[in-house]
Length: 296
Ligand code: ADP
Ligand code: MG
Image 1 (tube, helix red, strand yellow):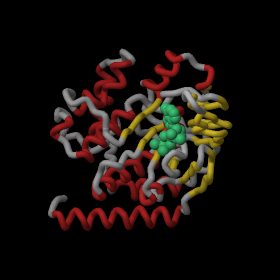
Image 2 (cartoon, helix red, strand yellow):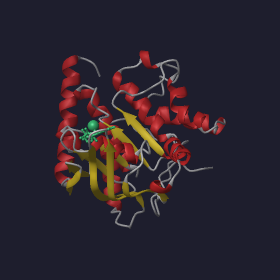
Image 3 (spheres, helix red, strand yellow):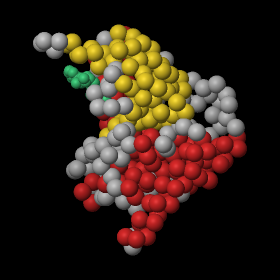
Image 4 (cartoon, protein in one colour):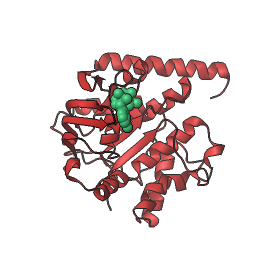
């Protein structure tokens, strides 16, 4: 069976799509301590290598240099927040990472695939097979159920069999929607819809999850729910790259890359102790709000 886990070198995880492991918020803390205890220091493969990446948009009267030689690597299993003021090149970088566009200059590797040398068809193939998109606006298909929405990337590949179908159900369960399998998006809350989108992003065993302001439409409690889910996915070894303009969201990532004027401005690790403290206090704040609202 094609394994659903990340291909992190020497990864000892044994969870596959059929594993009943729950990833409901709240499990993250327990899973985190387990993974810290393992002290994983082995070298990891790169999910992506961004090397002197340049993107220029040629307009009638001028050329806009949206990215001007940006370089950084993202090892498999990393959790990166990309920040920067408006116009700094975040969306441009995300579009390139998502194979929605091609660089003007520089090199972009996704796993071992060199994006610069690919045809549009090959890019489309990588995009649908190997990248898990999570958008601010969920981008679910309204006529389809939860499970059908999760299966959408598989349809595009003509890879639909009983096993794949089961995998979609398992993913729905893993993001906490086991009791909503046949609901349609309109019958779900924003947080639930975003969990469907996250399950959908995982169905193809992607190089990385590419999240564009994934919590931008959500209230603080639901934001916490989604960030807790990302925590768990990160603990499971998945690679997450997210664009956000919110400091509180970026504080949850392992690493923060800042762009400015199309260039890399800074690339820093969040202090691990502080990150855990932020995680705990944000979780507690969300729990307090939930209690006040009388919903659990
Ligand atoms: P951010 O997402 O950080 O706000 P963008 O990547 O959207 O930044 O934009 C970076 C720069 O590139 C901006 O100056 C923007 O106006 C320009 N830009 C973005 N997309 C295009 C496009 N399709 N055509 C021309 N200019 C663009
Ligand atoms: Mg943008």
